[in-house]
Image (cartoon, rainbow, N blue to C red):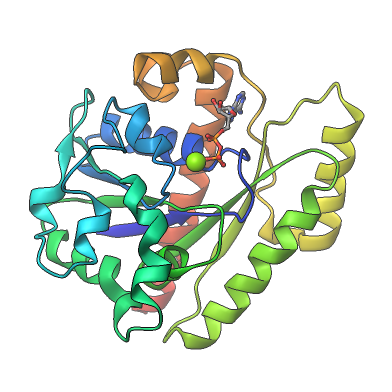
Length: 260
Ligand SMILES: Nc1ncnc2c1ncn2[C@@H]1O[C@H](COP(=O)(O)OP(=O)(O)O)[C@@H](O)[C@H]1O
Ligand SMILES: [Mg+2]
């Protein structure tokens, strides 16, 4: 099972949108996909029509140690696409757990339990550093960092890159990561300048293309469908399709090198 995480310590940059739309593409290609909501806001959970205020079981219950991961998975409207939802109670986790040992591997262990059932898991992270982010970065094999192309885009990104560097030191193998420029509008100075600055600062860590602003993302979210399923040929869908294709190619090339 491939496990990718989508994270940035800034809200509103397109994390949930990225997770939903990549998941939709993979499911449409015939893969069994699991979306995992690790954000106490539960936007991914709401996206698919579940209520994070009342949902149970959820990713929160996995931290209690008694919940089986398989029983916390819900179906969505999309074939082959399942959801491990978030409950708003996740917001209390850091306070509850403190520094209790072993809590950084809860999600990794849960996904391990599920690895025969899914081909692909995508983790939607909260916009803050804490036990949930640490779990996601310990479990994943690739980290995607969506960055909104706007003024001060790099400010929020620095914090995320610091977090990543901290996690890299505690991992057995280095975590590959990519920056995904989002909400790009070629007509605005802010978008064009910030994309240039991103590339100048982070070089080939930046996906060479960008996800454009596309109002249809919001429409699709109202229907509870990934745009990549609702409107596969929308501009936004095409951009996510190119992103997925390139990431999979890199993934395969790395696997070939790793396997000799
Ligand atoms: N490429 C895009 N074009 C237009 N709207 C977008 C795009 N990406 C995200 N949005 C919208 O921006 C808002 C925030 O996106 P979201 O994915 O929820 O961000 P995050 O998960 O980082 O907080 C949502 O209303 C979403 O529909
Ligand atoms: Mg989100």
